Structure formats: structure tokens, C-alpha cells
Image (cartoon, rainbow, N blue to C red; front, side):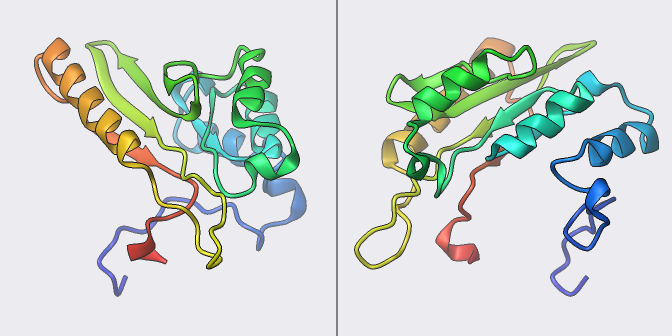
Length: 173
């Protein structure tokens, strides 16, 4: 690619037939089949109920990354997190604080213990007067740094990690 980034192994976008994309479980089932995985070896990250429904139908663990429209539906992120928490497939719960149910860490474990972290950071989607989205708060970044340091101290090393947020950082859009 021109930008030097790796190509994804598969894309299940709008160009696919309807039954091969969200909210249907085909993309997850296809990944399980193609890469010889079990459902519990995947993690579906999405921001909408159709993504949750897709993960549940495929028996895949689910994490939500809150973004620009989540609170516009009249249900707070905390209320949505409580709804998701009723599912055995939802892996949220180690939230940054009670007021921020969209910023949390999902630790992943393998045969050798704690092997990977997924951080989900609420991108604080309320539009400002200029029409731009609010940035990630300094408190969220401080929490992220503290979590990384605590994990490295506890495990004796920092494990690899990915960070997800719904709205990309302004430098990338």
C-alpha cells in the first residue's frame, strides 16, 4: 500500500451481500473458520447494538467502544453498559470510574497467563459549538498511563496492547 500499512486479512463492509455483513454473524463465523479459531478466541469491538447482536449470535465475546451517537439515543453510557453487562458475552466492567463506562481495559489471557490488553477509550462524542467532537480527556489519558504502569509492575513486563476509540484522533481525520 502507498501508506506502508499492512493490508487487512479480510474486510466485511457494505460491498458484501447483506447476509455477509453486520448485523449477521457471517463475518465472525467466517473468521473462525478461515483462521481455525474458537469463538472465545475472538473479541468483537463495536459501538452499536447490531454489533452486539452479531457477536452474541456467533458466541463471540463483545466489548463496546462508545462514541459520537451513543448518548444521543436518550440512554446514558452507564445505562447502556448495564444492559450489555446482562449478557455473558460482554467483557466490559473494569471501568475507569463510575462516570466513564466507556473507558476500560480488557485483559486477555493465554496458556502463559496475561498476554495482551485491549483498551477502549470513550471518545466523548458530544459535538461542540464548532461542530467538532470533544477530545479524549486528560483524565482518561492519565488513567491509561497508570493502567499500563500498574499492569507492567504486576506482570513484570508491559504486555502488548491495542487502544480503540470510536472517533479517530483529529490528526487522522
